[in-house]
Length: 210
Image (cartoon, rainbow, N blue to C red; front, side, top):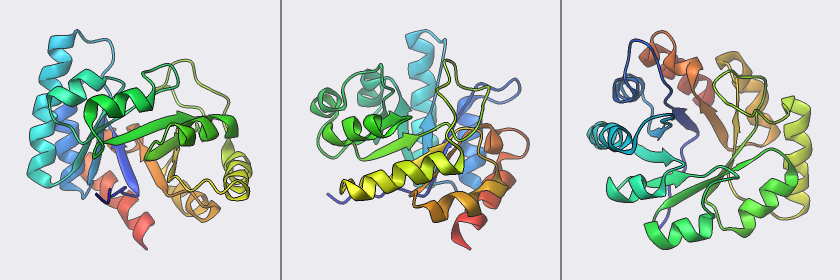
């Protein structure tokens, strides 16, 4: 099965006035076709309920739903896949649970991380952070444009062709500098979710497609 890996990944976040499903729907109204549900510090039952509601919204808009960290919830709500951090379940084990058609994402900060992700047969890699971001705890060293260029160059030299996403503090005005480096796309959290998520999503899509 051919897996579609969109150029824009929207990552939900805890917000004071909107729920994760509401943020997902606002982004989908703006054209987002890939939502990563990132729920932190919630009991299992609450996380599962949020995931079910978000899955229904993604189905309504024809969007891919990826669950952050939790393979069990991804399996139970029939999400399209899971995104795994370096300390989470091994992607190979996750695929055994979710099946061969599932989308498995990995996390990287340096080239060695990228190599490990590729060895684990992930479908895409979130590489970052681009710059400092307050939404991520235990933040790895920032990469900037030069860091991405070095890692993309090493990937080409080693024939590693997994789609790589820039992530971490990326603003809409950064897109035209980042994409030419050779990344597949960008993963965006608060730059879409803060303010008018529908309009913000449209602005990112415009930069990616024009």
